[in-house]
Image (tube, rainbow, N blue to C red; front, side, top):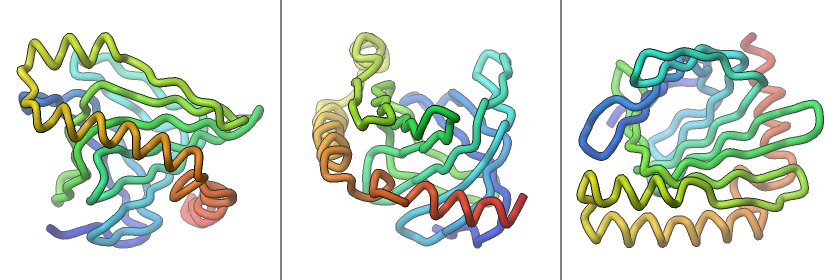
Length: 175
């Protein structure tokens, strides 16, 4: 698998289990690109839903994608603090078209005080039945929910103090 170089503008695409396109983010600037992780930055970018509906993000964000973990993390820089939105999904793949992953519905929203909430459990259960997620996928997702919660508690990876600020400063150099 190739990976994008620093300063490259890439598109991000999420898919559903059956392989259908779920959502596309028009571009992120790669701040770090390796075979293990991609860190990107964006601000007020266009997002297109599978049904064609479009909207713009409201604030600058630093995005963390891993080739080893079944989740990705978006740190959103708002006037009232740093929020995180985490998607449970496959590790990323990258080709010349976009960074890609399969979204498995469950999300965790984290507030500036580092309290968090698991979201979309009903959607996950409905899609698990409808799309017939294999038991192995279900186990992996459940394990990664626990791992992600541990990262939040431990302030590990993208939740480490200063992580988002450091990468946001680098992102500003490319704007």
